[in-house]
Structures are given as structure tokens and as C-alpha cells.
Amino acid sequence: MQVYPNGNLKPESSTSLEIGVKQGVKIGGFLGYLDVAVFQQRYTDFIEFTFQRWAESSDDLLNGLGFGSLNTGESQVRGAEISLMGQAKWGSRDQHSLDILTGYTYTNPISLTPDYNYGEGEMTTYLGTSHDTTGHILKYRSPHLVRFDAQWTHPKGFMGLSARYQSVIKNFDEAFIIFDDLADWGLNEWLEEHPTLPWIIDLRVGFDINDHSQVSLVVSNLLNKEYSIRPLAIESPRLVNVVYTYEVN
Image (cartoon, rainbow, N blue to C red; front, side):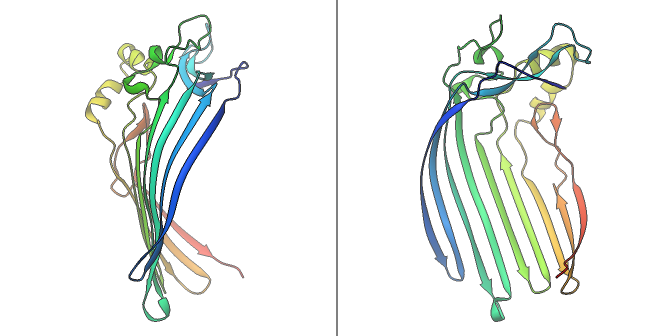
């Protein structure tokens, strides 16, 4: 799919405000930090990818259809984030350790100028190009993101587990739905059958062969979930990597 240039694109500008609190936490042998923050960003000349016909005639397969960057007016992103990171140690001489990093982020990204016509010679507005205009949420944004990572390290190696979840993207270019009705890409059926996104879990295990060598197994998307974050873009299935590391002093 083509990405077309825009020679008239202006740089966006923004003002940002963030207020946060960071607090040390000690629970038994666990030492860490709890971080809570709220933030806001306001953009002028906001730059956004837009899917439309960019050329009357073209040699590419989609005949001038594709993505291009446009200045779409003003937008605002408000949100909050909470995270916890820390480490627990135990055993003789603290040979064992457990590192934890977890957090949740909420964002509310909205268009402040939904009626602004940013097209060239045609009515191209946020309201006219968006699939879901509820609350004027910006395209291709997930309001909820949860992440977790833990790793146990011991004298002979390590074992780690990470998990992440993000809410489904509600708003994207309406052109995807229009062309799906014409070309039967299967997008409508996919959206009906996958109203949410799954938890994605990754696993890593490593063993020290000697003081200089380590072999590890890294598995991405452990449960082999089939999912798509953006329309018509299937994410990677389960991927297994065996890694050998040799350290030269």
C-alpha cells in the first residue's frame, strides 16, 4: 500500500503538562517505586495519516489509493498512568532476585476541530473520514494499555514472563469499510468476530553454560493468538528464538 508525500505539510506544535508523584515502596524484601501521573497535550496543525485517493491516475495496483500525512487542525490528549517497578532478593548472599515492572495507561485522544476541512478541493473532515466519531476519538488510538513483566534471576540463569493488553481500536478511516463493501476484503466479518484484543504473553528462559556463555529460549506470542491491532494488518504468530550469547572480556 502506497504512502504518498505531502509537500504542503506544516510541522505540528504542542504544549504539554504533566503532574506526577513517585513514592518509594517497601513490602518485606521487596523494594520499589510507585509512580502516578496525569498528563495533557494540546496540538496545533496536528499531523495525521489519512487514507484516500491521492492521485487521479497511478501505476500502482490501488490506482492512487493509499495513506498520506495531513494537518487536521487541533487535537488534545489527556490521560493518566500508574506504574510499579521494583526488586525482591532472597537466598544466601541475595543470589535470587525477582524484578517486576507493571503499569496501566489511560488516554483520551480527541479532535478539537472535527468539522475542519483539511482536504484539497473536497470536504475532508474528521467527521467525514472517521469510522466511529463517538467522543471525537482520534483514529488508530487505544484508550487502555496494560503491561506486566517479571523476571526471576538465579545463579544459573533466568526466567521471565511478560504480558500486555490494549483495548481495540474503535476509530479508523471509514475508507476501509467503504472499500471492504466493494472488494470484500473480509474486514467487516473480522471486526464482528473480534470485538476485543487478546492478552499477549511472551516467555524467556536462559541458562548459563559457563562464565562466558549463555543459551536462552525466547518465545513471543506464547499462546499463538491471532489478532489485528490495525485494520488489515495481522500481527505476528508465535515466534520461537534460540539465542546463544558469548561474552568476551
